Length: 170
Image 1 (cartoon, helix red, strand yellow):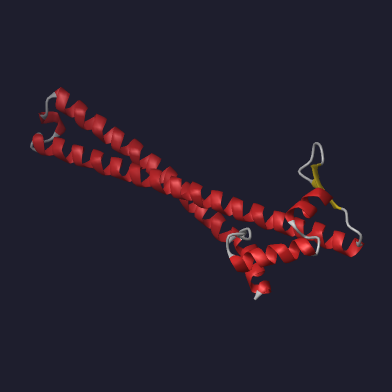
Image 2 (image 1 turned 120 degrees about the vertical axis):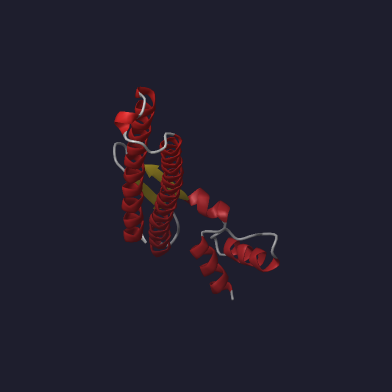
């Protein structure tokens, strides 16, 4: 039905496709009743109110109820669009942080393996028995490992915080 098609398009924030016969008939009917794209766009004014986050929306028609309905619908759809956009950006940010976190984990694992290899190469003997160079290498690797674990923990905490914020928004 026409109502279902329009509801689906609105819910998905899609436009009617004039190449599809049924949707073309809907477009023609909307134009016939004065709700075609050209009529709507020529009768509407949208301006940002300077120095604010507000917009001023006005619609001119022969019926004040129609004008009110058009303006109110634009406001509702604008808010819904912004919410959807913010949610998508939040998910993208969380995904990016998740990727960084995984990369940091791989780096920590790599440094851990280097440390283990260095200890094996040295025969896992006491530091006082190891040459100064080998001891210094071990310390450097342990320092790098600690730094990478700290970066990983920071990224992990940020990721979890963003996940919670997304859950709240959803």
